[in-house]
Length: 297
Image 1 (cartoon, rainbow, N blue to C red):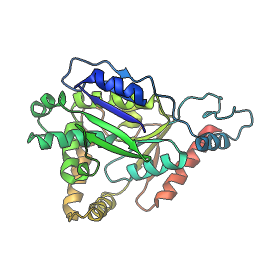
Image 2: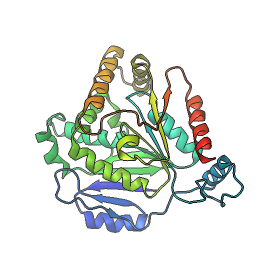
Image 3: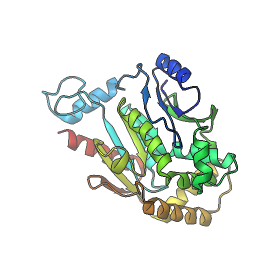
């Protein structure tokens, strides 16, 4: 089980435990003078027999060494960046793609949602930096992988399901525009990507977080389709959402994400654009796998 943490409290103790478990601990969050990163020594590049065989086959070259991930024969990690607006299918595609390739999946949006939830629970305004920044030194977010699935912890509590509400989504969008928040979370995301093969999804992965990612994908869909998907998702969780409200919130988030001054939502120049409006999930994944094969030849 892999666990990645960021936060301020009891950092030495966390690092000691992390070293035993093979985890990464990133010290400091926005508002802190401590910007250094501390890495547990137990981490090794994430690789699997299935991934080795898949890439060796996709390369289509007999002279590629056994287990190599790239056509030049190197054994570095494979990093796939998936970006796009809310409801475009990023998380669903990224999860299934990671499972098919037998590599790690990192949902960066869940990190921002956890911070947003922290602000809401404290009764603060997530859109007001003076409300947000003082709380960050007292905020710890952990990403833990349990049975191959990502679980998110906020100050020791599992909030994986709690962060999936529309209110938390709005708070996440608000705190995500703050450079202090993004810089610290991005530091953690880059640290994880430097140690494991993974699929990472978000809104600025290919343009800002991992500009050198091996594969870049930008997913999109019509606002109506994205609202329908989110409505269906919330209904399945026992909620009673209003479709029109969801559509308005999605369009507002699109504006916020695209117009923020720091690391806005936009397609990387070298990313493959896929409109998922009328496509099945497996169809999208197959298209991405085809790109991986092409780039490995």
